[in-house]
Image (cartoon, rainbow, N blue to C red):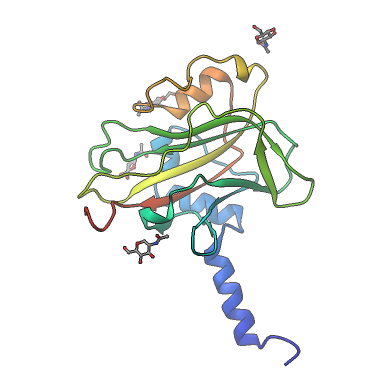
Length: 210
Ligand SMILES: *[C@@H]1O[C@H](CO)[C@@H](O)[C@H](O)[C@H]1NC(C)=O
Ligand SMILES: *[C@@H]1O[C@H](CO)[C@@H](O)[C@H](O)[C@H]1NC(C)=O
Ligand SMILES: *[C@@H]1O[C@H](CO)[C@@H](O)[C@H](O)[C@H]1NC(C)=O
Ligand SMILES: *[C@@H]1O[C@H](CO)[C@@H](O)[C@H](O)[C@H]1NC(C)=O
């Protein structure tokens, strides 16, 4: 057969739709439905798609779509970041926070900073383009580890334009506690502005501990 049948094409499109973010409107609706802008104290009007990809040791990499529920063992990472859509070449700042630590009902240590890095540049002018980081991260990637018995946590990834002088900020360094972080406060203090894009995933405790 020369061309895939309509059924196969349809199945492929349906898979594409759940496999990654393809619409800014859908990403925004997913953020709003999960109360993320309110919990972040940040306006979220995405201009580009931030594609977050987890490598998997024995399977195809997983590309997040906003709100996907992943088993913890698929989030070993570190994730790779790409940008789809019109964007400057960089630099960009990427952040990942847990809004629900230790539990969504009592997020008394949130936000937990799971990643913070600057000096990301588009690797190419194609879209999507991988983001490559020219300096070490301020906070290295931490795998989600919701405590036993917790409901799944919301792990949010955000892309910002990097302001001038960002490399001189001292609010967050590799030795700063990752708990009780506030990305809105940090963004205000260092001039990140509003996120250009983002996505999120839900991750619960390992089944063996749940
Ligand atoms: C924060 O998120 C919770 C759901 O996890 C929601 O009930 C609450 O209204 C949100 N708060 C704000 C200020 O958006
Ligand atoms: C994660 O654990 C489940 C069992 O809980 C297993 O079926 C699956 O293959 C594991 N995936 C990875 C990526 O290790
Ligand atoms: C950052 O700090 C360096 C060295 O202290 C200084 O030369 C530079 O002007 C600063 N840059 C900005 C944008 O503040
Ligand atoms: C984070 O900081 C913002 C100010 O930018 C504030 O409105 C908000 O209440 C803070 N959130 C938490 C959880 O402390």
